[in-house]
Structures are given as structure tokens and as C-alpha cells.
Image (cartoon, rainbow, N blue to C red; front, side, top):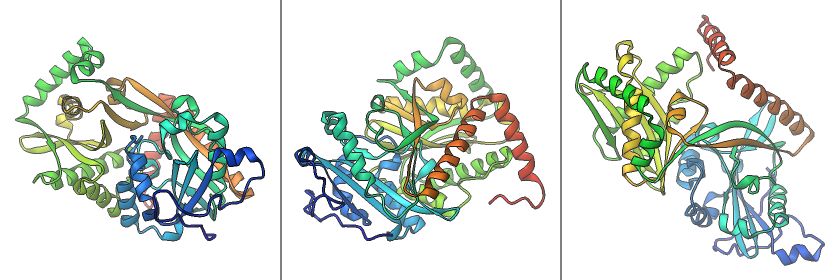
Length: 409
């Protein structure tokens, strides 16, 4: 990677401004827009934590989550890139990226990728709102010039917030997914809005069926609880069984990935770990893995037992009902359930946000790959939005993966 200018050690970023070249026009100098870049996350930690206080859209914007990711997956310093943009004398944006190699190309992208519901630069929303459209676009344009050492910048799953004004300067984009959130001031507001009379009756009937099978117990486990590691192991085992049933690759098969989620739960730093666990006669039958930040709970992983005899009692639905009650009664105002449609999201979420993937080609080859990836994303979205076609694809994929000798890598 080309040498990058390093940000200074002071919060004011006391370094040479406009390290990527000076603009000729006077209006540029009046705006006070400048950019700094570094490979070292420690150089941006102070400003990152300050921006994080304004709220995050996903755990992928948490510096503690990203530091754990870097440590667990041993991402080399030369494959890390942190870009800050300053306007009117204040840092207004931070873009943390990693470099990966795909199909012979160097690509800059997010650290956590699809393992979190969405991804986005960290921005000072108040300061960004005060900038003119021209200023915002120039901040992004200057930051784009600092994206060195790659053929393509691929920014997956940016939330379409602020009527599109926040991230529109980050290259061409396409709709890829929808993010689902439950946003309420209280459990009572959530319950009365999302649980219809027929839904409450159905849940009660399923709860009675599960209770008839044994003693049902719901727990919220936090770091230090004795059953936490057992619940985490059960979570990943249940997910592996479900992915095998669907015939798709298990994203948690890598031990480093499982250990990362264990680390984040137990470390309990900027993100607070919570496990919502449902047990039947002391056997864990459903688990929900959450990380909380501010007034938001990010529900990242959910699982339930594959035992057929438990299906009439629907332990997964019984667990989420109790989990939602626990979340809102604890004072949280948002439960983020991530991207991709599911029955539980339809039942519990009253807010949907479009997610867009942005492309910034940095070479001719990068432009070709961006075009191919956009086509792939459009086809994937087309299939997923049509239930019959999506089920057919899943069935075919399951058959193919189960053939002897077929690799799951």
C-alpha cells in the first residue's frame, strides 16, 4: 500500500492539512475542509469514541468491536485504513476500512461486513446537518482521494437515512436489503401496537403447549453469569444445525468467528452483552445474542432447538416475546433485528430502513468488478423478494451441498 500520512497524536489532528494536494479555489480554503489518513487505529481512537457518543447504526461502528475484530483475525497494519474528514475546523466524518484481496483485486471494504445489520462511516450528525450540500459532497470527495492501495472501494449496506443526504457522496449505489427495527417508548406501546388480539391468542396457545412439555424458564444472561458459556455454545450448535438443514454455509463455522462473539460478550466494554435464553426443564431450547449501545439493542444472532417435538410450542417465538419485553422494560427504545426478512421481524418491527451498497472504482478492473457485483446484488434481491423463487433456490442449493464430495468452503 502506498505510504499514508499519519494523523498526529492530538485531538485537533495537528498535522499538515490537505495532505492529498491543495485546491486552487479560494472558496475551498474558506470552508476549511481537510483530510487525514492513517493505518493505525490508535491514532483515531479519541475522535472515534467522540463520534460514537452521538449514536451508532450498528456494532460495526463500535471501536471496541473493530479492535476485537482486528485482534481476533490478525489483520495486518498495512491492510487497515482510517480516513477522517474535517470541515469548519471540526472532524465531521471517519471512515474505517480494511483491504482484502478478491479475484486478484485489492478491495477496500468494512471490517465486519455482513456480520452486522448495516455499516456506515461515523459522522457528527449535528455538524453534518449544518454543512451545505456542496460542503458535504466536498468532504466525501476529499476523503475518496485518500482511498489508496486498492482497485475498488465496496461499502456494503449503508442505511438510507437523513433522506439520503448523508452518504450520497460515496459513489454509485444500489438498493440491496432492508433493515428492520422495533422502535417504541415502552413495552406497553410495543405490545399494543405489534401484538394483535389474534397474535396474542396464538402466542398464548403455543406457550401453553410448551409449558405442557416441562418447566419453561426465561433468563437474561450478562457477562459473569455461570450459564453464559453454555448458552453461547448452544447458540452456535443450534445455528450450525439450522444452516445444515438449509444447505447453506455456516458463517460461524470458523472458530475465530465464534471466539470473537464470545470476546465481545464477555469484555463488556463499549457494547454491553446480553443473552436471552429460554430453557425447558433446564435444557436450553432458544437463544438470542445481543449487544447494547446507548438506547439501542442490536440483536445479532438467534437460534432455537431443532427437536421436532418442540415445534408446536415454538420456543423461538416464545423466547423473542419475552426478550422484547425485557428490552423495553429495561428502558431501551430500539431493538435492531438486522437485515433480511423473517416472520419475527414482520411481527415485531415497526421501522424499516433501505440499505444501499456504494461502489467507488479506483481502477479499470475495479470498475468492471463493481459492475458485475451490482448485477449479482440485483439478482439476489430479485430472488429474495419472491418467496416461491427464493424457496426453489434454497432447495436446489441444499441438494447441491449435500452431494458427496461437494465442498462447503
